[in-house]
Length: 348
Image (tube, rainbow, N blue to C red):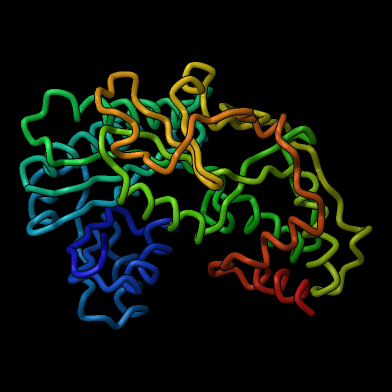
């Protein structure tokens, strides 16, 4: 799907950045990165010396910018969004303008530009949303499903992917915990009951690639993610990182600060209603839109109807300390020396 194709990635945040080297390994004809942060793009340009890369400064709220960015593009991976729960909760209208109207601009421009496929990166917070960010992601998924219906561009294929918490992304607690431990604590935890689904950047790339290949009628694809108690994650990091900075782990306190506005105790991967439309492989769920008219065998030939789905991170089996360490070992700490030392210490 990527080889000798022209690909646009909207957004150069932690997800967009993680895709760049992995996409380049697939040998695209051109990889274009669109972001509204000039400084961020300048840093990426110095980091990657590759003639196939093009960097475009612009905003998904601007249709004329998107028209330029999508010239000759075969597929779009849409990661640009407002993703921080507390920021979106403080100003939900701005979240709507970026996460919903901006996505509509992307789909409309793709239709007009002859793009073949669009994959929208959503969030597990779209499931029974409890905050503004999750609500905008749910609207985005529904837009992806509905835009396919009645379109005279039947060759345009769309899909959404639902992410859990991506380890070491800007929304992950891992870099925050590492900074707090490096400073001698305390490590701030909102509630001992908190659980989350986690995935690595390699998981993200695998999910996006499979979704690009299988996109057809606005399906939602979900990786089968491990669940972690956040307090277990904090304790594992304290025990490992604290000695590296001369601290006794027993002296690093965990301070309970209470849930933030819009924060949930657990995350869910799909709704009760979606279970009846869910299919699975060993690693992936696919949720078909209620309006899908094609036979699922056409696009999901190696999937089977899903059974025994554990929807909530609160009900899922949790990783123990050694499994948490293994998960962190197999990811890429981004721009955080402490995260790197945590992983390296476990390998020693």
